[in-house]
Image (cartoon, rainbow, N blue to C red; front, top):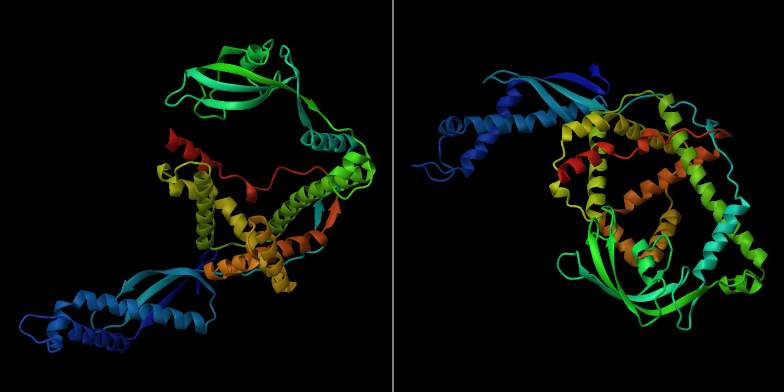
Length: 445
């Protein structure tokens, strides 16, 4: 077996003439049974005429029957782990002679698994500062605020105004209209023109304002337009925040004191920061392992990884309201741009599989049951429905693979040697497909 490059190899094959003739005869006999020729009853046409009339078809079917069989027998006999479909080269096939050809194919990468325990990785133990804790509790307090109606008076900054809005010019089609919209006068989220127009009004009064919306405004119908509105002020309200005391804590759950609430919020924040810090270190750890194992990977796997990246990106475009059919993507350009990143992603998968096998890491039935319960809670459907859908769609194996991957990553992190330090930029294996975004922008233009 000759090594061509990377995982690509080449073998020469010869199929003896007598085997070729035997298979050709079998296929020709099948033609005599199914074809209809003028002057002959079905199945009675002379073999010579059939072979002459359908020579090209018989030849092609003979090759299509013999070559895969010969390849499979050789690969199985020599225990060659072939990846993808072999390419057939230098095919020679003359009537009455041996068939010879070369098969070029890729094989699974062979490499020695190096040390994956006690690998040094940067990890900084996260801490929750008092300022962060106070900010989060302030957000919780804001969520529990109540709005109290004010007696009629002129509106001022800081008031919450309940208004009716209706566009009078500047928009296409139906006017923009809403009732009982609550705006905080002077807030960053309130357009300055609204703040200026409402300030000084009393409930029951109305005014007209014109707003210049930026091109990137979130409401597509208003973005980049100069729109006039008629505004009617219905009510003024003030926001009352609850006192930060034991009663506030009790109102939020199973807490007896405000200190218990603070400790619970601190723990929640810490867990979130730990999760983010660990994920960053795990990505760095995988990059370190990839760099320590410089083995080639099959191009077929790289191409499939790129296809997955493209499919995921197009799905995201569609979910965000875009039309993937309008994107004229240049596959060769994308492949060239994504090849290195996709190769690293494939290497990660190969390494994770080898390490999982070495450590007997698997997704247990308990793991799968727990994941089914989690998804069922999120989607508010019976666990049995989730299980049946996964089994029907063949998704159970994919879920098991994801769980195995997650457990392997945790194993590697648990056995790594953590050292403090500055985290580098996000690893290449998880970079956004910038070339896809560029292609999307070109298509939209």
